[in-house]
Figure 1 (tube, rainbow, N blue to C red):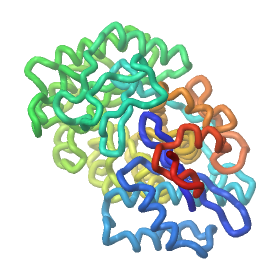
Figure 2: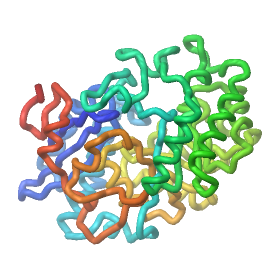
Figure 3: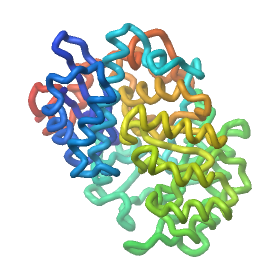
Figure 4: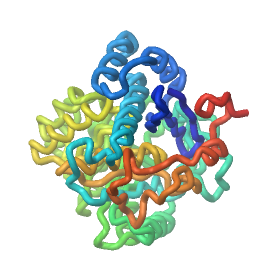
Length: 412
């Protein structure tokens, strides 16, 4: 098992899993500090294991990593990528698409929603949410921020809200074929101003309302909208923000409170005037259970790059479906992780939409040899595995400095 890290808007950590008879599977892990070293150490442990025994391999790795975080933690980012690569490998070995290996699909094509950030292009972020200037981007392509600082530091994000830009950004995404969009509401003017604070500035909800209206105007009445808060707020601020956008029929308001505040989310759902979504920072089905049981999340948003593997994701989807909830996976991955998430999502009857977070990355489509997202959807075909092949030359071109490229040595 070897890795390569593509430096896009986030780090896309791609795994290449090869068996002794030359079969290959591809996976992708959600970014994290030190991630490739964790994967490397895990890979040393499973050399010689039977790659067909996916559950046994993942169970063994989970047990081995239990001292470093059996309930949560970034070891699950590594586990999720390895699990994905094993599933892809096995589907390819059988000559079938992954959706067929998982029991068949409910969706002939997977609906994709476009994440549009706060209007301007998404800024580049490192593994500690440290703001960076991507080498592939011009100043006009990414949002302004103080390079080197972490995104959640007060004042680190400096892009002012531009209502005309919001409307234009929404219209541009719709023109690409997307019929569902998500925008950030935790932007300058709405984020807490003091270090450690989670309180929105006084009167700022009027800006949130203006933003929502501008986005609706640019997108049109037939386009569905969601808004993201990135777990930045306290209970009172979350209520104010929910009320600010409740005049629109939105899909969900995402992650208003910190993920560990389970009781707060349950209470918020009882008083908020907008449907809530969340779950990208939760690991395993047990972490989702209290929120799903309480019906506090109208839309469940696990991230397949760190939730702990296909088995965990399926348990979450099934629990949500049993309670009449929909599932819309969070996804900041490159084309490998996106293709995998689409294959898995197609097998869920309560699937709503899959996130796409790389509109501003010019080489997203070049990393694979066949088109992936077309007119806001990903078609489920009979191509084996996750349905795409990786262009190794493009991976090498955009690889992150200091990281190896599938065993070839670090990029300089």
